[in-house]
Image 1: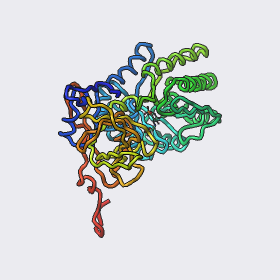
Image 2 (image 1 turned 180 degrees about the horizontal axis):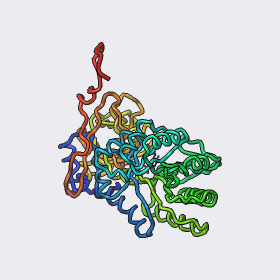
Image 3 (image 1 turned 60 degrees about the vertical axis):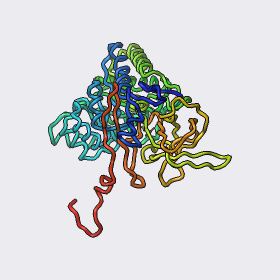
Image 4 (image 1 turned 90 degrees about the vertical axis):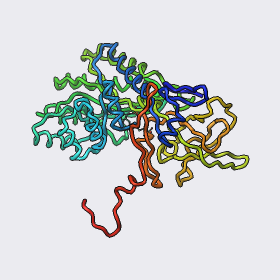
Length: 439
Ligand code: LLP
């Protein structure tokens, strides 16, 4: 069994997280419950930032908050000096509510609405990552109307797609995001923006994939983007100052996954950029990155209560938990694999193999195909590890199941970060049939 961050097994065989007994947390807050190891989040944030610091290079580490967005996590991110990547009016609103430093907010998205762009101007955020020509048009109109400058990055697709250990390079990328770097679209976007009175082109952005385990694709992408910036400097006498290489750094969900240390990705990016700039004479840009999963993924654990069990003789034993695809869609959506333990049986031998099923009305609602666990009983607490990224943030009310609570644990203390949804919350947007309501 692999434990993450501050996790430990105490004398009673109970899983502790951040020095807090998970069984006590389950009792106090109920299950399903997301528990975040805040010390691990801070450690990761520091590891990324310290690597830049020690290389003496300008940087921003923006937390890609689609992985887990809430007021409290934004506040911890702010304490750690992180910047913030938001992708919707909802995430931006959350950041503003959290009091996140606005100049460190970066706004992403391939179809930002006019209202969302207006909000970005009103709030005076740090930068908009521009995705397409329609958005360029809207930004020009808005900034001219408001007479308000805005920093922008141009998101490009460099023709590199990375998945775990492999990457592929293509002349042209079939992606809904960004301007193609290879077919002239990126040049066109640059030509349309860099001389604009209010739009300040800081540089280029790319995001080449998620759950990436080696650095080759990042190095290749860095090379392509810096070459383009250097080409533009020669052609247009304009110097881009920022190279944003996105997120995607992999984490360990199961023993099959062998990620690098966060610092390793960053070190290699920096070395590559230094090398290329030295060769081309282009000044070293600031390097920005956007980790999501690698900041919160393994910092999050979901606690469930085991309820019913079913044996299909000679085939498998099911144990069912009180959540499922409504709080973790990743197994059903991507076939994602997770590891787990019975949090109140940390000292017991792993004698059984179970399929962990959720409680949703959907046969595919299985969280773990084969979990090796001690003998399970109703009432045991199952801890599923590494659910901190794209778990709560992709949760739904399928079957009108209320979304779980989220608790932060750190240094032996715990606090509610998102309260559990109630049935009242669930019906709170519903209207009675035949009653005309205000919009
Ligand atoms: N920056 C951009 C522009 C992105 O699109 C993403 C993720 C990130 C940063 C953060 O990537 P990370 O470091 O978390 O890998 N729902 C999927 C993941 C979707 C990722 C979308 N973009 C999953 O559950 O695996």
